Length: 246
Image (cartoon, rainbow, N blue to C red; front, side, top):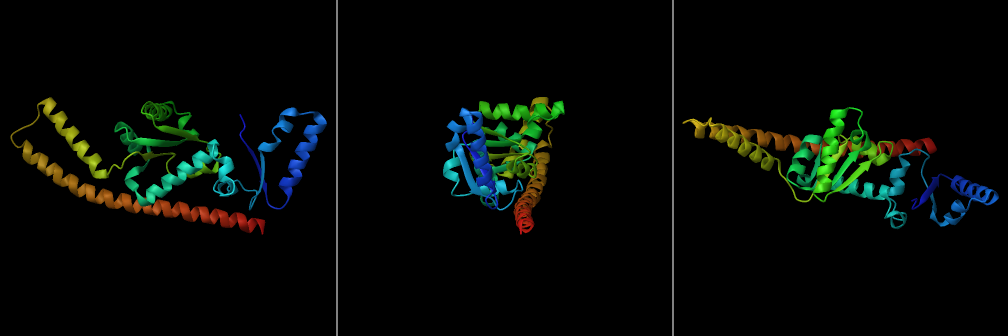
C-alpha cells in the first residue's frame, strides 16, 4: 500500500509533472490515481541527483507527513546510530563480528542491514546474515533491511553494510573479559589446568589488559575518523549537487 508519493525537483518541473499525471488520469479514467491524489507531495529539491533524497527525508516540513513510511523510519534509525556512534559508542556497533557478539548478549534494539548482504549470492554469507536477522527478531528487536539503491543504504554500506543500536552499552573490555572466562571454562572442562595455571591466567590477564587499552584507543580513533569521513563525504556530495544545478 502506497502511503505517499513525493515529487520533488528544482524549479517548477514537479508542478508540470503532477498536472500532466492528473490530466492523463482523467482522460484514461484511472480512478486509482485520481482517488489517491491527496497522497502526492510536491516539494522543492536542490537537484535531481538521488542524494537530494537525504535532504527531503530530513526536512522538518515533510517529517510529519512521512512519519509512518519505511524510508523515514530507516533514515531516523540511521541518524540515531550516527549520533550514538559519536556520543555513546558502547551502544553503536557495526560489522558482522561485533554485531553478532551483541546479539549473543540479547542487546540489539535495532538492526540495520543492506539488502545486498541479506540477499547475498554467496550462500554462506547470506546464511550468516539471515541468522543474525532471525535471532534479533526472536529477541524482540527491530530489523530494517535497507535498499542498496537508496541513499540510506549507500550510507550503511560505508559502515560494512550491517550496524546495530544496542539496548544497553557494552564496552570492549566486557567482551574481552567474557572471552577470557570462556577460555578458562574450556580449560577446566578439558582438564588441562596445571600447577602453574594461575600464573598463566594472570599473565593472560596482563596481556589482555594491554591489548584492551590498545583496542579501545584504536576503536575510539577509528569511530571518530569514520564518522568525520562520512560527514565530509556527505558535504562534498551536497556541494557537488549544488554546483551542478548552478
